[in-house]
Image 1 (cartoon, one colour):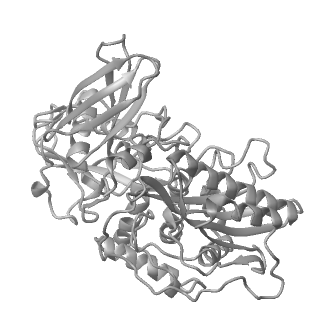
Image 2 (spheres, rainbow, N blue to C red):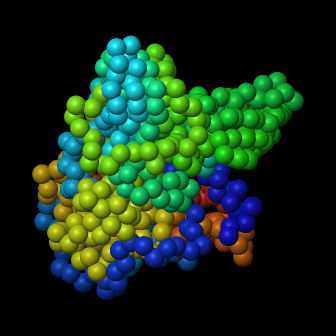
Image 3 (cartoon, one colour):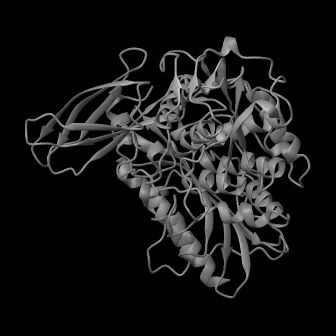
Length: 537
């Protein structure tokens, strides 16, 4: 347990890839022994760390820290700097590079999810479907809700899914229900004006599973959250609360008071009962607005309600009640759907765009869903099955799989352990594949939109050049009532000043900090280290 004081401080932290290490973790996933430790490598060609890098490592902040650094030539693999690089680290969200690579291999960059809607029953002369309408979930991670006109999946540097822990998280402007609206429009175009039976979501692609603070499901609308925007009114008056999407799936009540300017923002989102959201607390008058999210607990039921509402917007009446459980027991055998009964089909954007979203903003739920999708791709249904597919992929690479331990797909399990050396070998391997550009382009770019927007200054020589997947794991030190950085790392590609290309991983572990704002120091210090390496090579 983390104390209320420390937990509250962590909740104010303005960095995307922060997670609280759970007190215990399950025994699922790939668990392998660690590789051998090496201190400063004695290989030929390895250089001492640049003085600027050593100066950072020797700062008082890092007096209890453990650094692990590996930098190599991307083309040849020859090491440039090797400092304790085989030491297993707490990797945080850098873990996402592994299921991301496995999923890219399994699906390919151009794969598109297809989500069909089938009718079960005949349509009479008045356009009434004498039976059910069934949406078959395919694992589409965005369902058109982030699609831009130029064919990209949109995101923000501080994505809405982090709104409860990251100040300044914002919404993308796209309609999160765009995919359902498109499907409903196709149903209407097929001549259906009324559904006399039920509307059902077939979510049997893989086993639904609670994980961390979300539920892994093959149906995902608006990242399976309700966005709650709170705006102040006059001092002492009730604040206004708006939700996105607006839906009968949840009834929202609020008791948020507008406080004088300068007072702290304090908002809590609870669920007092099924289908209920309660927003309470206070918002200062000088706050423009505050965003919070509510995690949906039953994604198929949520999607069913949203689909019924989308159908009604298209003039298609549904006799069944729009709210309540998804009637999954009424589903036909999964192999009984026929092309003749298909009345709508939604195509996703290419899978490379999904990977771009997951890496650039470190999307936790979607990274874990990749594991489930890997299982489904091979006719399996469980998280353990998906982790076995990650391992099967890694065994096709030159990596030493015995030096890798993974407990999940996002980097929030105590079993997630690997070395900086190992992750650079993954990056090198992926750089040599035909789909290399999809993998590399998905990484965040230092100084640009995404998780690394503030890692370097706007004037940095590596801004817009260096790419990375970062990971930051922070826990609460109850003894001293302070945060401690268990691991902060960067791994990616670095073009240098001479035109040479490098692959790198830089990690620091066990850094006690006085307050949560100090987490920005190692983040920026790692950016400074990369600038030094860039300049010297």
